[in-house]
Image 1 (cartoon, rainbow, N blue to C red):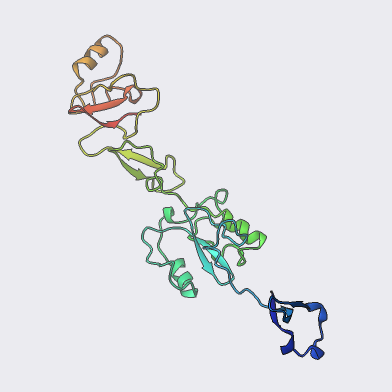
Image 2: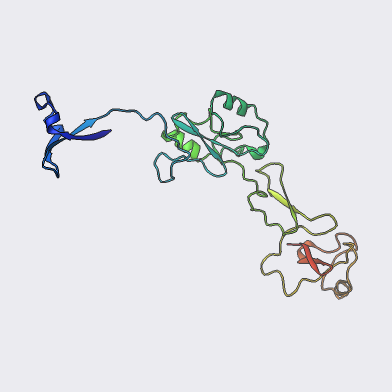
Length: 255
């Protein structure tokens, strides 16, 4: 690092100067002769908090959401969020922290994706001991940048459930589908909202409140062959449902 100091020429012993190229003499606004000297000050940066510097900074972390950046001496790590972990990420990040993390009981939704094709460090809670210690080396940066934590579809708003339906995620983030929509007790349907272009006019009830007995309109449509089915809970194919109304209200709907 370079710094400059300006002092009155009378206060300096110019005979003792051994580096004339590092100083310049000028006259200030008061007519005094002043000397500006330049010094080289060696120093070493011990740590940069990669987690707080702006993204435009070349030292910024490479962790991808929803993982959390954890600053470490001279580097950083990426950590998957947890619903149940008692670890505090604002606590001292030392060997004790990593020891507790290694023994933390987590579900698959609190780890990185278990497929090596989808995430570095598969099935682990963090990049610690998996990626190169130096987060700014080519390998270390690439490893952290491809560390992918599971995303809870119900928590992140990805689920396309009807407003009055609940969302239940699958047992594993690599399952397909990743979630299901569940109607409240006493209501029927698959819990999904109506798809665009599937609904013509106002939604009409297809069965009575018991969820089994067809309405008169539905009975006539069955007799005329406009729709088909059998007299049971599955009396009509799902694809023919659009939405179900109870007491004039739209409840859980079929997609």
